[in-house]
Length: 133
Image (cartoon, rainbow, N blue to C red; front, side, top):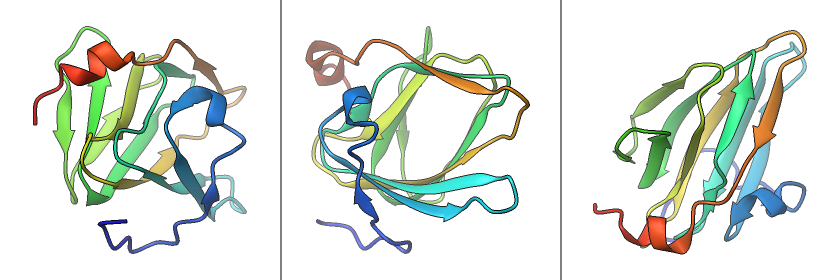
């Protein structure tokens, strides 16, 4: 790994592997007060599928390495440590590492009654290959 994450790497994210291309790692940072937060680490080239957080959004705090974030219909955004991404509820999006860098972010899911995540199609290798750093 070519980054030095400030939070624990956690365990290989087997529970959500079907929604990722490549390997990711997950460490639960908080859950006991009703606010879920995770350290998510992506190996180079790893990204999650397009997905939507219904009723509650998500906030990403980028902590290590370089990654991508994209909302449907918008240009991809290159992410670096210190960047913050606010994702409103109902926004179709994806995020993950660049092809040459590990990437970590803190993900905080905004609490919402009956909030769900709808997982959609993968970001294809062809789409991903078009990204320019």
